[in-house]
Image 1 (spheres, one colour):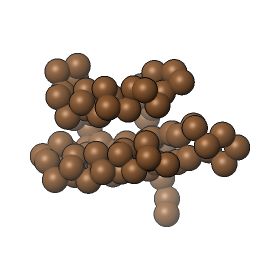
Image 2 (image 1 turned 90 degrees about the vertical axis):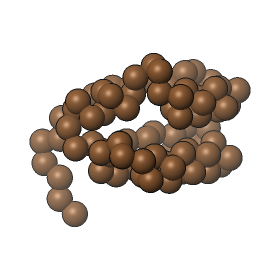
Image 3 (image 1 turned 180 degrees about the horizontal axis):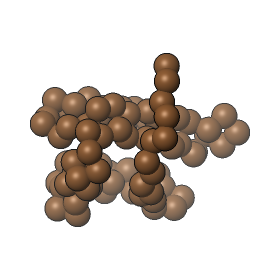
Image 4 (image 1 turned 30 degrees about the horizontal axis):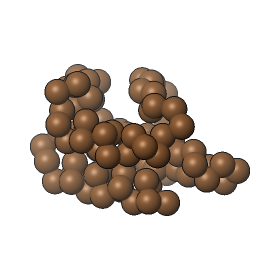
Length: 86
């Protein structure tokens, strides 16, 4: 769970910056404790793309810090929300 704690701390920092990130979800697999999924929600796709640039030191520092914990490197996929209700 050290990786999860680092990811949650990372998002606390991201939320204090002007990133236009609307929220996030961190989910840990019940079957495989080494597997997690992180979903982020953004104002626009452009805002998300700007954040996930290779020159984002905040993000690249996190990836470097957690790299030894990864079995495979994280993969970024983009989706469009069709509907969302709570």
